[in-house]
Length: 123
Picture 1 (cartoon, helix red, strand yellow):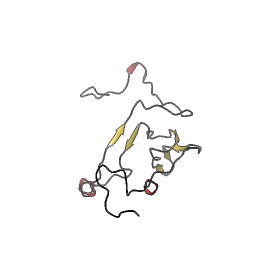
Picture 2 (picture 1 turned 135 degrees about the horizontal axis):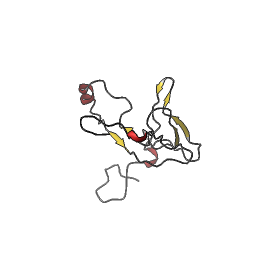
Picture 3 (picture 1 turned 90 degrees about the vertical axis):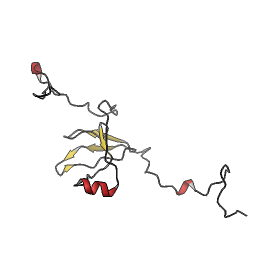
Picture 4 (picture 1 turned 180 degrees about the vertical axis):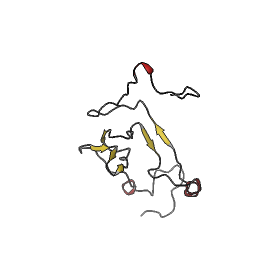
């Protein structure tokens, strides 16, 4: 029979069943989700980072280019601190597009060039 004592370091036995570990649903073999960045109701929740999706730029940034660690930002610094959840943003301005996605829209300001800060000259 099996011993109920914990496995000793270096032994090959494990009491964790890999089939019982939760994992995000797999999108393999399915059509990708069409994600519109904004609808008439406002911004959409981004799809899971592990899912297959195509972005239709309708006014907000693609989650391929910018993704927050939190989908809902706490209303105060105190609430963020008490929740102990990290707030960060992953920015990938040169993220690759998936086949079938439209390129990022470019605005041409003509001979004036892009708008700059009058004080520090930053773009």
